[in-house]
Image (cartoon, rainbow, N blue to C red; front, side, top):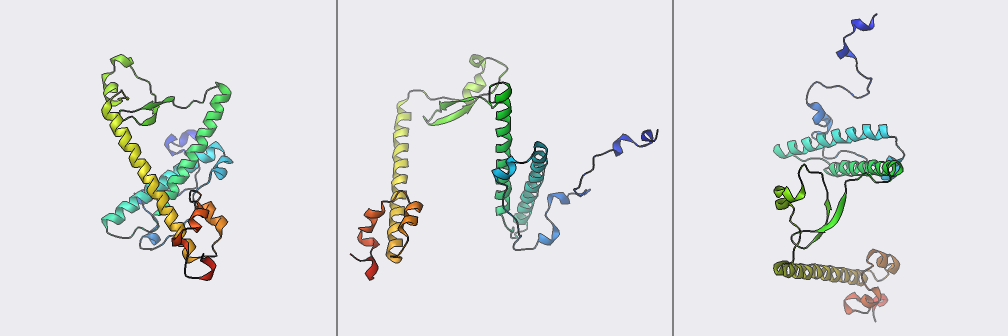
Amino acid sequence: MFRALIPLSAHREIHLSHSNRDLMDFFDDKKNWNANEVKVGRSWKLEELRIKSNGDLHKLWFVLLKEKNMLLTMEHTCKEKVRLFPNPERIDKVEESMENLEQVVRERNRAYFQLETGETGERPGKPSVNAFGLNYFHKMSEHLIPKWMNTAWKKKFVFNKPDPYVKTFLSLYREKLWSLKRKEANRQRSHVMHLLKRFPNLDKVALREQYPQVDLEKALQQGKSRGHHGQNTA
């Protein structure tokens, strides 16, 4: 009898977050506006998210989304005002947390669909080769018309066909990748020899673990790794 006296628009679930009637939800706390550093925690780990319920993950997703919108708004405002945006790594931490949360949700969805239907429920796809001869994973999607009638799809997705220009491009591309790999190996080897020259008592086991691609025994025999001290001379 008393329930009819209360308008339906006034009914709402109880929540603990504050309610603002303005745009301040898109901005950080005012005490952090002129701060050079804001103390923040780390991102959410996969192990922590896996033990949470679906409802908690759903709430956490919107909390992270709201935090990301706030940080992007503050970053844009600081750029317009030519001010320092404190702790820009906060955006990276929020994005990492959202990626981990999405991975946990996909794991649960795959487990559910495999148990119920025997399939993963993921968007189907297949390995393909693009017009430049490079391998990539093509994600399939449903269309309203057959493939042979869909001219727009054929213009957008051009797959590889035998072409001498593509072969020339691939040979030059592989040569460039090999050159970059060789330069990186030379850079690491020079850095290791410089470390051995400056620190003759360096832990060889830790150095080998950090630079597994460098032949440490061969680097020790080089003259660049020997310093002007008795511990590291031939």
